[in-house]
Length: 66
Image 1: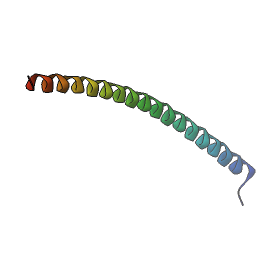
Image 2: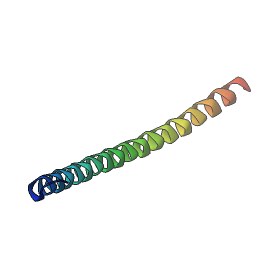
Image 3: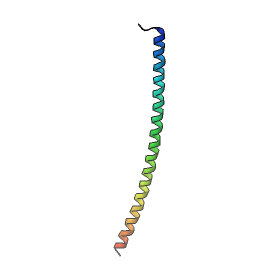
Image 4: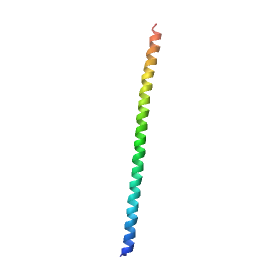
């Protein structure tokens, strides 16, 4: 049977492990939020490029029919 000192040491270690896990989860959460924001920026830029390409195609098609 484990001594009270050994049990206390294990409890402290488990508490440290749990705290480390929470810190890792917070880091992962922050990273995912940054990546999500960046993906939104990329999507907005891509939509803008699509609109510009549509305008260019419209101009080109208009010039071909003349």
